[in-house]
Length: 56
Image 1 (spheres, helix red, strand yellow):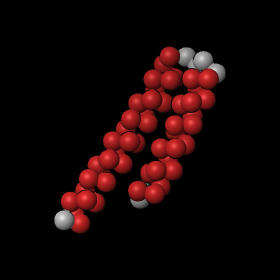
Image 2 (cartoon, helix red, strand yellow):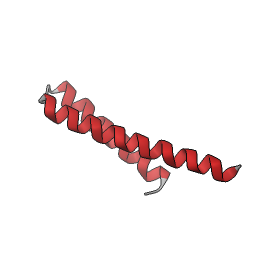
Image 3 (tube, helix red, strand yellow):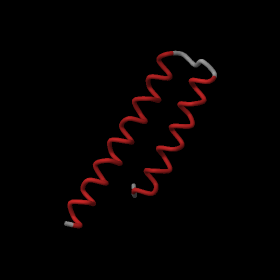
């Protein structure tokens, strides 16, 4: 997945999380979505760090 695609996926999952919170979805569902978002953000940060290291 490219950084651009990953960014889009992060935004999509963030919107899903916002909707789950607004509709008062169950704690388990909100936690699952939040953890998915965390993993995507972590992956994006790792890609970004690797990209910066390559440029040096």
